[in-house]
Image 1 (cartoon, helix red, strand yellow):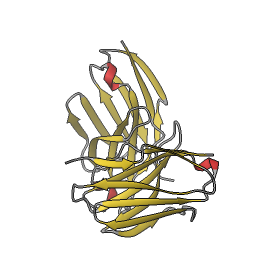
Image 2: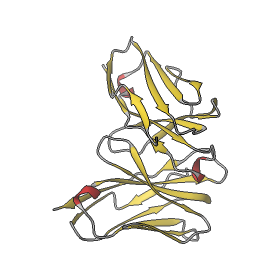
Image 3: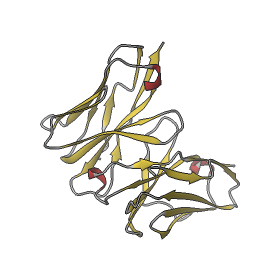
Image 4: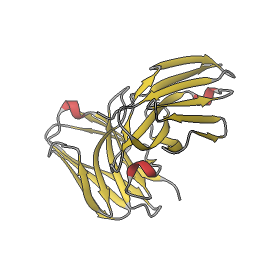
Length: 111
Length: 115
């Protein structure tokens, strides 16, 4: 299946440190997206990166995409307690009308 | 208005009940989605509506029946559910129907418990 694998499954760091999470997928994609979900709530879109892009920034977020390795990473710099959440990558099969979400990384920022 | 609203926030129902979940967006989005999410798992796609027509049904049991009365509204009718159907049900919408190319806006979800 296309479902992404995320690594690590859980990450706990101190406030102010950087957090890096990784996503790997199996088949060719057009786009890859990252979402955040606070406990038991809806998902919030963070970044969309297209297959012809290698890196994208949004505020404290940096996403990279390596299509040759079928992997992406999300870096959150200078973490804050409010960044505590689950983070999901989501990929599309080329031309597919749906997103398939990875298993997610649960990030905890300790004050 | 960049919000997707869902009602109710919580729902408890027996296995013989009939209930409906409601989702609404006023962003002019042409694609709307239902997802099911179990605890500590990713969202799983159930249905996709494009331009008010059902375009994807992910082999969802018939006890779940989606409806799109107009471009702003999406309903999920529930009947004869099983306890294993207890989950967070998320609605989402996107501007375009090529899912990967557009960000999806999610509602806060309905927490469903089936007794």
